[in-house]
Image 1 (cartoon, rainbow, N blue to C red):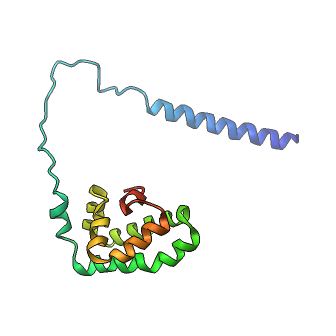
Image 2: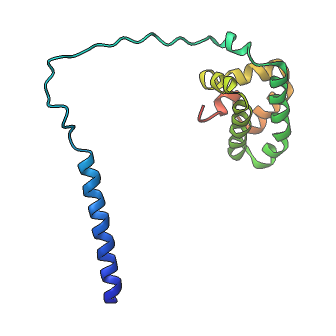
Amino acid sequence: MKPGLRSSRRAAAAVLGAAAVVGLAACGTDSANTGSSASLTTTTTAPVTTTDAAAAGDTITDQQKQQLCTDLGEQLQEWRIQGPTLGRGGLNIVVQTWAAQSGVINLQVVQNRSIIDDITIDNCSDVRDEALRSLDIPDLASGLVGF
């Protein structure tokens, strides 16, 4: 090995080592916390309330529901060609894109993935049935990952 290359590697290793030491030192104990627990305070927070699925479904407009059906319908041929494994990834992309267009919808899908099934059963059952066949899943909610 060339002497210049060896010294460059040593210098790089030294810099990385110094950075690690500084990083670990920053993770050390807090000097303001001496371990004394003479005065402890208790805080109380209000409970978080969530809406039920029926109430959450009311805020999705008919136009948004139809858009989901359209988006799913446009992908059916691709899912037939790609097969279930790749197609399920496509389902996730379609639903995540649709849900992300409205923060409210995104939150509703996160809280209740079966809302996608409810919407498609009521608005485009034929598209839903074909998606289930193409993706080899019992319901659309089970095909969603990451929600």
